[in-house]
Image (cartoon, rainbow, N blue to C red; front, side, top):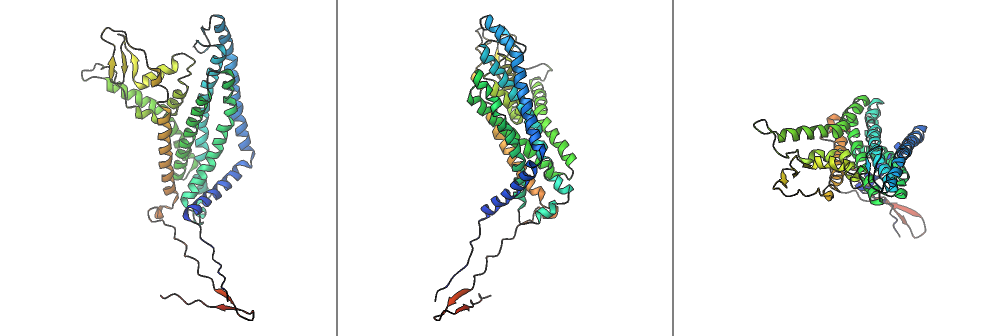
Length: 382
């Protein structure tokens, strides 16, 4: 007699969690991409960037040609140009496209995540969603990835427009890669901020308002705090001003604009504009006596010529710190959102019961005459 077992192995917890995330992701993407809104937003987004690129070319090109007639030195509509005309056009296009694309991402990413959880509460479907076998963490991550997937589509779709600068020169593919890293980090961070407020509040309007207030705090608020802190740190006890005191640079690690300025600083079509802004943030500046100060350290006041600013100090200093900081921030906010999605009375005691292992199937035994018989398994001792 032969025994035939019919036991299906249980999937691991990680595979179950990933399957739940995939379920939410597919459902959200289908509902988002079926309408006309998704394609309309993508078309308008690319049209705005294309118009910006064409407008920059139309404005900068005459000044670049004029500069070429004066030995490569001239003044364009935005400032001095001291390069060949083609490279100047490429630098201006890359600079303005990077800034405007970052602004669009800062406003689009929170808009897609600020209503992910609060809309479920308003429709009274969140409790039904939580009562399913899907874990709350998988629900939060699936909704976040679904919203960010569309934002990532917008960023990637704009790469051909940005790649125009490779034809003109003035920027390399490494600059485009750094630009994309900053854009992706900003989208993930601000998307996590919108999801956190969506899980914290019951109304989408309140979540949206606080999300954009946080976006302004990260951009404009950090600049104001940095300036105020630097001014107060430079003020002496007698009411005078001490030399080259500034706020900690960690205040600016959450500012996406500073990170993007750091990306375009090696190009800097103005010749000194972006570099001078980063120099003030870094604490490097000239005083009236020809002294260069870096943070709290000043040198060159002994009558000797002050050394020139180190351009390499500005390159690659801010955008890696911004990327790492926003990555950690997005992780913490996502974990907090997972906890907030769980009903209030179950946030500290919520545990999914593990499924009981399936009972061993009865063995089908075949007798000598071919007649199947069923052998009952003995019950386990209690």
